[in-house]
Image 1: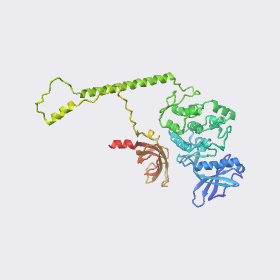
Image 2: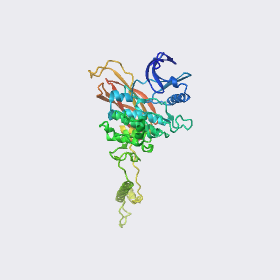
Image 3: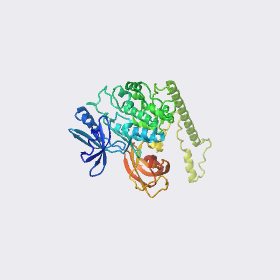
Image 4: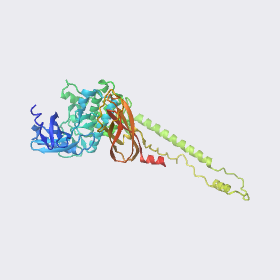
Length: 504
């Protein structure tokens, strides 16, 4: 106990340590305050018994290097790094809230899907960004995810992260297992090389715990070997076995994320996100199908129906016949239209002495003009369907990332007894990021406000306007309303080309 509190009151750089937040195998985390700016930070101090260990020092320094390269609203920020002979310290953003496992155990229990989906989307956004930067976490678990009072998710502890592009001097060699056992991927358990799909497996197990209130292999009587064997050889138990309100669609998503073979999982976090945004078909008892992608059915899951090659060929023949019929119908319609426009030829001689008006003469010239050639059915080509660039709220979310949180607000007292909207300004901080190659216009955000009892009390549409490809915009939205939390979503968006066509 003396060792735990030995640093309280000490100064690290310009920060004074005030209290112990927690500790783990690598070290302790303290709450500290900047002595001039009064800013709270979290200081992670390497365990003194490990400071002299060269390998541990390298790993701790690697965490600092990794965090310094990541800048995302859902990943904890590294402010500074201090290396001394008798200590190593990370000065990080202080996140006021609970770890996700503590939140599930003490606050929420199983999280309803309507609430779990937007929370998990934030987690996926963070990991998608980290993977794009070439960083995999390798220790994904609810204990390394924080949830704030405003329901912002923050990813912690990149202590054993690995650069995807790293080829030499790796910190984890084949046969070395890292991470918490219950959330390990099969390849981690077997000591095989891992990639971002290992993180996706652990995210699937984390989603299971969010929806059911418990981890799938959390048996206090099970030995470590028994847990390893289940991870490698047995599918996760059905989520509804622990919480009956888990839907079949969420079960299918969990099954896909936690497939034993990496090639049968979501291949990246974008695919994982599509499962939540409705761009994946999830019929009960059938193969999970992406747009233009079809996953192979898992042999471990008997509830998945296998699609045979004969069925695929029959379906393809049906599409070909339907396409040929459509082409013939179009060709016939064009033929009849053009036949009606063709002048009727007669043998009656034309009286050249007849006086014609200028208008009649012009009409006669038009009739003598050779009709355009009629295309035969073989010459008619099917027109490619134009893509409707108007996006619904769900579709737009594929291309526009939106992060919202309540910023600083007026501090008038709020009472649960009063539902009156007081003269109190509530400010929402929003961040829009266009991740596509398209420019968008008419971008708008729907903000839903909730009171202290978590009842919806109103909606507000904020019309943002144009958002160009790759652009990130941060702004504040002020409203006078008595609310305790907000939820935000993309309400509408159109590509710039679509808007211009409508104007013309």
